[in-house]
Image 1: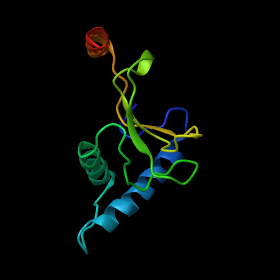
Image 2: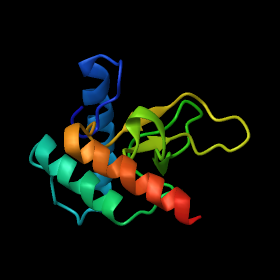
Image 3: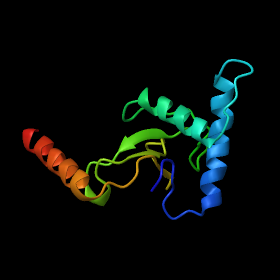
Image 4: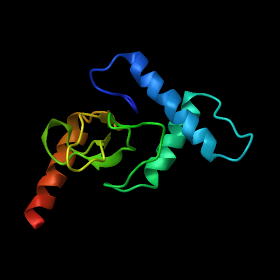
Length: 124
């Protein structure tokens, strides 16, 4: 799946979230600065994600079903191992919000990631 895709959701839903994210990102820029297109927004989202670590709140235009900013997560098991996503930040009763950031890994890349996760678990 491409950057910022939400599995199982219609294409319009992803575009709506991107427009919302672009609005917040543009507010954080210097006055008069504009994002020229969705590629610019993707680059800005990529920059924001590069500054965040797993478990940190990511303040974009995206919000979970509770209206909260999501946290950055990384899946460490299963078929989506190694993929980053944004998820609900409420600890007590998290909602079903999940926004995939990374594309699905396939072939050799997936096997390498699975091996690295396995080695990491062995060391712990």
